[in-house]
Image 1 (cartoon, rainbow, N blue to C red):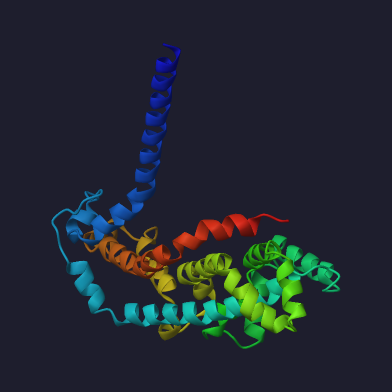
Image 2 (image 1 turned 180 degrees about the vertical axis):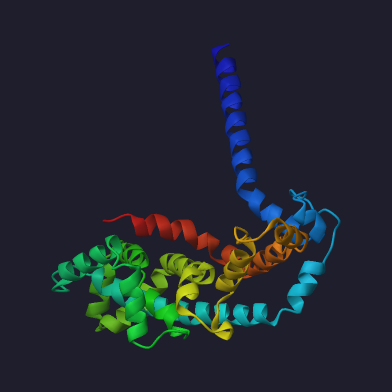
Amino acid sequence: MHSYGTNRTNRGVDLLIHTLLIVIAFVSLFPILNAFANSLSDRAAVAAMKVTIYPIDFSLANYRAIMEDKQFFTSFGVSIERVLLGGAIQFALTVLLAYPLSRHPRRFRGRGIYMWAIVVAMLFHGGLIPWYITVKSVGLLDTIWALVLPKAVPVFNVILLMNFMRGLPKELDEAAEIDGAGPWYQLVKLYVPLSLPALATVTLFSIVGHWNAFFDGLLLIHSPERMPLQTYINLFMLQTQQLDDLDPDQMEMLLKMSNQGLNAAKVMLSMVPILLLYPLLQRFFIHGIVLGSVKE
């Protein structure tokens, strides 16, 4: 009887946990489902706020409008360029900084000074105005370099990769040195291949970070042809939401011509590259996070 009662209790707890997880998953997915439904709904239904998680008066007008929006594809290309260029720079600098910091202090004198500098840089920020003045003073405003160079050394990624490399067997170094391998050979032939889970994790962080960033584009980019996609979408949405200075007639007209459905379609299309990429790197993600976050 006791075992039977325990099993019933366990099943009840499992059912409660599964129900709670389903509710959390639905709450998390609701904004995406709502945006997808808005993108496929008629403009009048969207303006009337009738759309929830399924389309009302199904229409592909929003996606047809995007196909005619040259600025959307221009900004899409800028974001692709930003991800490729910024991701490559972050990858190279993260590896080149994490590898020496993962060595023992006897092999890398001054390691403690660099570690303190990195920790201070992670905890404290110079401020928005000094950041903007610095970017402007070196002539990077309104260029692709303004979007990638200020984020060239992500401190969190460096620490994650450093801790992962520190967890690799030290006998690898000894065997490589006996065979006459230098530091560069050890990095390229040993540590980079063995650190694939952590490298995939920091690469995913880099790609998602560059793709989703929009605030720096608002401040640093002035030309439409150099504006990244997320900045273009957020700028367009902000412009359509500034209703405070409109009189009732203008507000009514704006609501009838609501661009919410069009914005939703742009958001959905902007999610496609990340949704395609994430499953490829997902199997490395948890492994890299767990091992890279544990300090030896």
